[in-house]
Image (tube, rainbow, N blue to C red; front, side, top):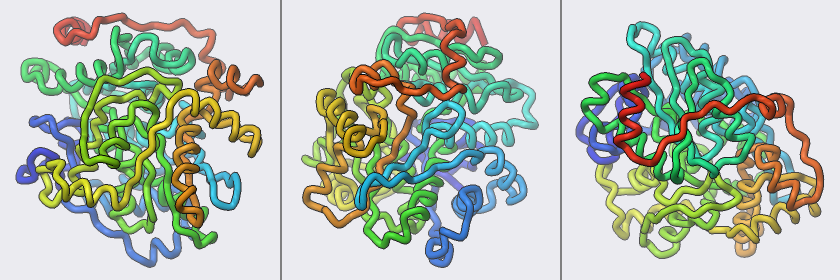
Length: 443
């Protein structure tokens, strides 16, 4: 398997280099040189495979021998250890529950797979690998859980002060050991900018082995494609066009869905559901892509004003790989597969109420954004089957959800036990020089 940068399709690297570096030197994003197609027989008989078997077949096909099959199977067996069930609300609406992992978020799939694959590639290295990760909420908890006590790897998590839920913050700041939390006086975009600048700083990279665990790392993206196949397997018998509605922030989840579609999964359409940070829906509607500072919402994991993975989306639909210009052709190609809707906070709150009243199902704010976007799409497309990605357990946003519904939300034990643990985090300004000094002094 060879990979290129979204900014240069003429220079290729191995899977190991792409995973361990995280970002190309030109600040693009790594993409597979070729996205292979799975056999029609495999797609037609998905229901005969277990979730780990599906994950193994998809990854084996995509990685094309970059990891020996026996080793890859061990990585999958250690990563895909919890389910991704589809819950039917009505005849046209289903929910893909992605919160059954250790941190109660969809990012557990990517984080656990990445921890295993990085550990595999790192096993013969003497120097410690430093993983820098910016989080708007769920990424940090999933990465912390996935990498906790992994030999030879240290994780530094940057999160925006006051902009993650209290229980999310506890997931980032209570594990200790090889997990360090930095509380940044800024937004998620500021955290992500600090991480990117660190990767591009030559002197810093000469001193430290740095890598990324955000969805900018291809090792996070690949396993997120697995559950699209697993979900389709569960609804295939309904014989309806399948539309995936994806609550979106940094757009790694939707990009993983595009990967699945390009490998042969018959997905009818994608819905990019955002909160008021609706840069991508705006682009899909007008052809104008205008990143802007993020605004704070109750669906905080999607508070992203300049989504990194949009570069990968553009690259998939551009006529020339490695040069994803946002011309009319790219826009026309993309909007054939993706529609976008933005949802504000008042509507999100009403969506949470509606799902609870109508279906007796407690949905989190991000899933509610997806629900409302799907209902908007279904007004003109009533004959499709919608699958809403429920990306996190509602207890992670317990104060908002309980206030909106006026009922008590149960907290799973693996999250509840964190509430009494002391927070350990270092507060830093959103200044790169200060951040770089901290890295040099502490790592």
